[in-house]
Image (cartoon, rainbow, N blue to C red; front, side, top):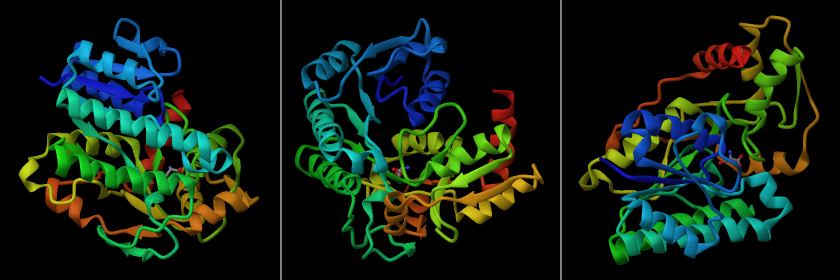
Amino acid sequence: MKRILVTGATGQIGTDLVDKLMEVYGDDNILSCSRRARPDNWAGTHYESLDVTDGKRFYELAKDFKADTILHLAAVLSAVGEDNPQLLWDINVNGLYNSLEIARELDTALFVPSSIGAFGPSTPKMDTPQVTLQRPTTAYGVSKVAGELLCDYYFKRFGVDTRGVRFPGLISYKALPGGGTTDYAVHIYYDALEKGSYTSFIGKGTYMDMMYMPDAVDCILDLMEADPDKLIDRNAFNVSGMSFEPEEIKASIQKYIPDFTMDYDVDPVRQAIADSWPDRMDISAAKEQWGFDPKYDLDAMTKDMLEKLAKK
Ligand code: SER
């Protein structure tokens, strides 16, 4: 049975992922770490406060827990990173460096999420290949490319079992995203239910890859269980469940809430970031090498999001 340490456990991905990990591997084998307080529904589970830039504490927690796998989710997202690139570098790169060194010293596997943000304006926008130009123009993107390369380096040089995916915008109902460019596609569902209308900070016609959280969680588990001999790319695989622009998610919500309306108040910073990212990635490497198989399309996601959020 795996012993898994999760950093950034109370973030948007961690909140869903930890619940699933406890279901699959048992509560006792999961150590959730975060700078925030322990969520109420994790009472009685292993939980530690951790700032990932504190390498000594990070190492001691992993060692004492006898972790054999680290899922390193702690990171600053793209929009917050443009406000504070210094903070972003400290957490995204120095925190990642700590996780790599700990994985090397303790011989653990390591999952690190990369992002569509690892691409830039010179990357092909349609069917963005697995291996292509990566010259991002955001602090977030630079940190993600550095992360992909560092993870590849630790695998080749030290044999650390590093694995990763390039996540698209992730949509979920349990925890809100923490300041990204794709967040509009989460906020829109909250406002649809609460106000019946939404003002989008991303402009009409802006396509980005997206995925529903249950598919994102499954993809982390599947990749970490995949046969290492089949993994050619490792850091990091393009993954996506769908690609849409604001008018399409609006139309999807209108199928369930016919009176829903949307207008625009475009944020130039986040719009420029979105414009520099792919419209739709090629996900064939993930399918071929470890069987990536997302279940939710836009309408299936909308139905589930609205049902779950209405209950919440
Ligand atoms: N959701 C992230 C962001 O918008 C992209 O990986 O920053």
